[in-house]
Image (tube, rainbow, N blue to C red; front, side, top):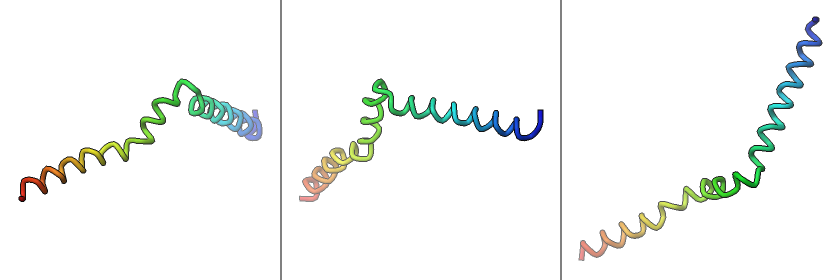
Length: 60
């Protein structure tokens, strides 16, 4: 086996892994968990608003 064959096998292995990751990421089974993860930055906003409102009420 020469270096060209090893590089070709390495490229094929990486390509198969890439296809596997793409299929996993775009699987309809994962959509719900990805949507929940996408909304995580906004999940804290309602809690922060409640804390701010409670703090402003207690100052009065």
